Structure formats: C-alpha cells, structure tokens
Image 1 (tube, one colour):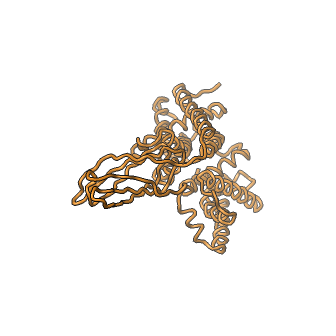
Image 2 (image 1 turned 90 degrees about the vertical axis):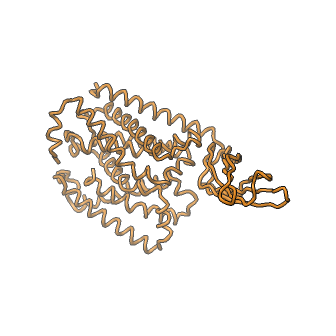
Image 3 (image 1 turned 135 degrees about the vertical axis):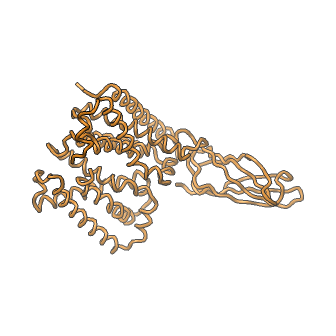
Length: 279
Length: 125
C-alpha cells in the first residue's frame, strides 16, 4: 500500500527520516499499549506476579520481537544483528513510554517498593515494545518486504502477533473468567465452532488481500484448512500462555481452564487468522 | 557489517542493559523470595475533626513478603470513660514492602483515649 507520505519518504533528509522513525516508534508503543496501561488488572498484576512468570514473558517476547523485526522490519537491511538492535531499541522506547504513562496516571505510587513499580512497568514494556516495532514498520517507508521468502518461522511470528494484537488487551481482565463461568458447555461448544468458522473466513479473505495469492500454499482448500489449523494452534498456545502468565490458570480445574482458554481463543484465534490483514 | 546508525546502537545498548538488568533482578527475586506471609505495621498519620466526628488517617505498611488483597483493618478506640468504639476500613491491594493509607471515623475524640489497630484478614491475590 502506498500513501503520499510513503512516496515522498525516500526523498527525505536522513536525519528527518530518523526522527520520523523515532516518532513512529513512540506512537506505535502508545497506541498498542494504552488500553493495557489503562487496565487496572495490569497494575495489580505488578504487585504480585511471580518473578519467574515475568521472566518467561520477557524471554519469550525476545525471539518473537526479533521475528517481527525480521518479517516486517523497518530497516532496509535484514541482518540479524540489525534486527536484534531494533528489538533492544523497541524495549527502551517501550520502557520509557510505559514508565512515563504510568507515572502520569500516578500508578507508580511512591509508597510502594521500587521493585513492585519496576515489575509493573516491565509488564507494560513488553506490549509497548511490540507496538514500537509495529509502529515503525507498519507506517514505515514501505521499502520492506513483507511477502517474499516467508519461511515457516516467519509465518508463525505473523500468527502470534495477530493473536496478541487482539487478545492481549483482554487477557488480564476479570471479564475472561467471568464470561467463562456464565457459559454452559453448549455455549462453549457454540463459541468454539463460531471461532473456527470466523477464523477460516479470515484465512480465505487474508489470502486475497494485497495480491498475496502468490503464497500458493493457501490457494487450495487443503491449504486454507491447514492455515486455519496452524492459526488455531498458535491461538490456543498464546491463550494458555497468557492465562498462565497473568495468573488466571492458577487453581482451576481442567474444565474451568478449558472454558477460560476457549473464551480467550475467541479473540486470539481470530487475531491470528486475520493477522495478514492486520499487519 | 551492521548499517544501523550510531544513535540507534546506543539506544539499543540502553535497551539491552534494561533487559539484562531485568532478567538479573527477576532471577534474584525468584531465588531470594520465600513463600512467607504478609505482615502489617500501623502508624497514625493524622487525627482531625471531620464535622461532628473525628477522622484518623492511618498508614498501613506491609512488612512481609507477600502481597495482600482485600485486607480488612480494624481500629478500636478505648475511651477514658471505659467505652470502646470500633471502625473498619478495607484495602484493595497492599503489595509487599508498600504502604497504603486508610481513614477511619470515630464519634469520640481519639485524643481522649487509646487507639489500637489490627488486621482482620486478607485474600491471597
């Protein structure tokens, strides 16, 4: 997609271009993480999150962000070292944006232990850094290559980002267990069927967008079904992982965990399937 | 060779230090933290008249290792005449090592008696 801004971007002064990049990164971080920063469950989570779970979140986010940087990276070169630098820059921006916003909201109370405030900021930093990466690339100069040589790993990264894009904002909220409790097994079955159907529609629609039909593998019925299954797998994994990291799976019976997962899969699965339309 | 501009490498370095620092901090916290219980300290912040009643602002500090949620706090006022008045307040979240302030109201003047505080109960978040 070419916008008037894109066509003139390559003629811009390199310094100005860099500042535009910085602005986009900040913008992306704010847009992506603002709903989470204004969600009180996320502040509370900072009070009691198990350090090992936060560590898992941080360690898992790193390869994902490197993958994002490589798939839709904003620098012309795609050398691994550049992508890794991009990711660390995104973490720094994400931390700054989260820290400033939470400070403005007076969420970082001076009466609380510094470690608690730090955990609260770090929790928000990870989605914010994903936003910073997406912001710089999504609105970037359009020189990056999004479709060529897309490997299986890149495909998984796109699916995971799509799932996070839609599900991350609701995953830590009280509404997920609340919805799960008020649904009967029949409601859950209905929701699951609807989820899969909507996902399948998005997979087919996604393959027609932006002339991406050349990807071949999804051009056939088997290809579509395969891609829906892949998106479903990623959606379920991301849902379970988020429930665990946000402490929503603790002490649940298998049936309750399944119900919570199916509820969260609704946005996560659709996000994964629609990823190619979103990013 | 990388063609990333210098400023970006420097910001990247800051980001890397942040990530490495966080990993070390989290590992250290995980290793040193014990499955303890929250413990509470009470300190009177201020006593003031509020209409016909009296307001006691109380700093509640969690000196334990665990965050308490939905903490109930009871304040009792033993007056010199021998009567006892009690008041309650609740705290949504009181993280470990942190302080929250609550206010409790009494009909009698707390300056004319003895105040005592205790935690009633909490929920593990």
